[in-house]
Image (cartoon, rainbow, N blue to C red; front, side, top):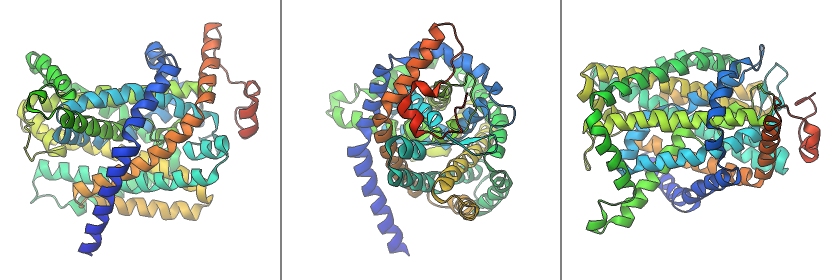
Length: 481
């Protein structure tokens, strides 16, 4: 068994080296930059409009899933261990400069998120219960005519989100509890069992149940965490300029240049910043479109949810991840070569600023973050199980596998879980990025249609007859007059 695990870990590490070293790292940023330029920098031009749409996003549907609930579900998946443990890992492996590259990934990723979420809305299917389903698997099949590739993406998503990522979330909860209350008081396996028992009734209620829980819990947990981070920053406001300078210098290797390690330092910062940034905000990965497709939007146009989902990327990385980075770097707990990383580094950093209650606060915060991620990740997988199998037996088997992974993931080594999640995420993102580039012309046409109606003083509405090719590809019982 030990030899098998060693071989599996070697395979995963080799796969990560290929996917992140050669296939995905630069294309992710280049494609995001391309969408940014092609759309006329829409994430900056329409920044205020995003907030305006979010204010009215609860009005989309009285019986189905509103735009805000879809936004909360995707944010539940985004805001998880990546915002606390992931930021700490990025700093540990890539130095403070990794935070800058997380920011860059998010800023260009906002445009990528708009494209994939708009496409998900355009190609959504009627679930016959006042809700919709959709996502990359659906727009790959309907838009590109390649069901086999849609199935391949769906399998990758089920493995990544239903299994690997939920193992990561469970692992982080158990580790946070162990750090807060002591290894002698916490059995990680029991933490996993209790967590699975809490998750089970929610996921058995399906997507509507997940959306309702996310709508309540996500705003509460995000605002609470940000409030504590703001207190730490205010307490150390004099240190803030130095921390910002440290991030920028490390991002471009300015401090390492004198020592001859310039190129290596920058590449390590970029690699870890992009990887952890993508894991956190999921822009381009193809996960959030599964939530985006479920909404009944107001205004009733595919681009509406594209704008709303852009806000999710901004909140996740630019706001929440930055809050964690500020806590760690201001505290001075990060030291190159120090073995402290992950949740433990975030906890110790907060404890050094606010006292012992900080470790309990982080344990509670990461439990809420990871818990909502688990239920949202489950919903993504369920939509793709339905896409492949179209039967309830497959969904029941999937639910059992998710709960098993929540239990097992709680006591597995952190490095092995993270590495497997990285590989799964990389495969998903590669497939999705190819698809959205090929379908980007449609996304830009939908953006122009939306903007033209706004300029004319109208509330945007989607007329499928304006897009004959799309009209022939999508189902007849969606986007009706």
